[in-house]
Image (cartoon, rainbow, N blue to C red):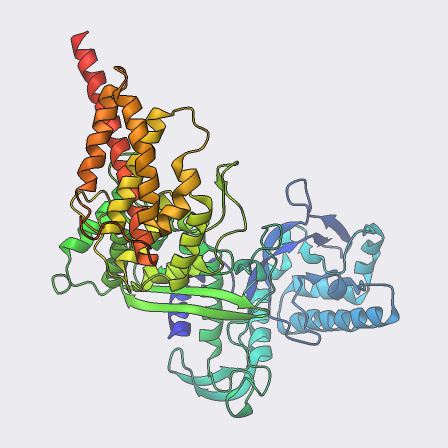
Length: 584
């Protein structure tokens, strides 16, 4: 099914851009031949593209041995430039050059093309070797070189494209006929998938300095040892695919992996998606959730409840990673479009949270949630690069696509981070609310302050926020707040922490109420503290210890109360400014 869907996509959109069995590669040198057969070598490097610029060139996976590409290949193949000065390396370069020359002659013999004849005669007479004197010492045997006749790339001529397609079919054919799993037709089957995924298209993780590591070209299907194949069979014997489906599927896959509009790159995975038919939906909204776009999605899903609308469009998505030279399919989705829209609507409902700095509900981008799993630097006021939880990006994406809970280890990891760095922000709150809303807790928690909630941990979080506000008002110049000193303790031992902080707060309130300037603020904070305290059961009081669920509730209560108080203060300032303006 996956091969079939990729092939369908290629036929609809990707096939017209690049000829089949061609890939965009960086070409460093151009061997230019004029109509008299005189060659010259031109560097394609410049200040911007120091290694040359990209061109669509003939390409097939070189699984082993010697396999030349038509007209555009490395210096080793075109000029027999060896990798080093050893006799062994030179012998290998000579074999590759012989294969390249044989391919040029075969093109000349198969095509009634005067350009093919001119190129072959130039190489047959070894006039192309005259340009080696112009090759600088820093040139590498792996540098790509392509041939031009005057101002035309020879490998893009129709005769070259057609000939190379036949070479590809011959090289990759298994020699057997059978039923193709992709199209269901009977015909010639492939021995191996004709093209690999380029190493740069699938992230493979970060190095010690936090920079992306370079991956290898990877095969979507690879069975090259008897231990991997069923009953010891090799290659595609148990995965029959015809040449048409195999080449189209890889063209579609590489097209999606190269298109920023249809891919999302993580640290060690890449997510790609497409639709059966064009439609106004893009799952990459998960990384850039504009309020108007999310609200439109929520309204659409609410209006179109199951059974009320007919929509036969389909959503397809792949999550891939790489293991050495093999592609690892982490996830594959083939679902109706309304179903994935409903999943995303649920995701946004489950992560919605109030923002302290703006009014109303905010929806956190997934990438910010992943970043917030890292270590918070109090001095630099940012998350340390490279400290995020391993695999969380992929796990949260899976939760969004399938409507499943986030990984259980996320809660423990996040609570550990918060206990140590005492930092609570919107992305962390969004993750905790997601965990609390979905299995195993399945708690109904509001995105903002719930003034009627009586959960002891939630109420304790609200109280802690007010106690912090009291200290800040009484000691505005204090270098250390109660959050800096006691937040980790408050998360786990509410009763003991409350007794200590309440005693200190009494002194702060007395100081505030005793001064005329701060008396209104002191009375308001005292009243707020008393009102929230009424929500605590008088007999049971606050818990002695909080489990993971209780710690989440505490953090949410704390954040919700802070956001509510800041919003109220902002509204009061705006009202006062309006009143002052009207009086003046």
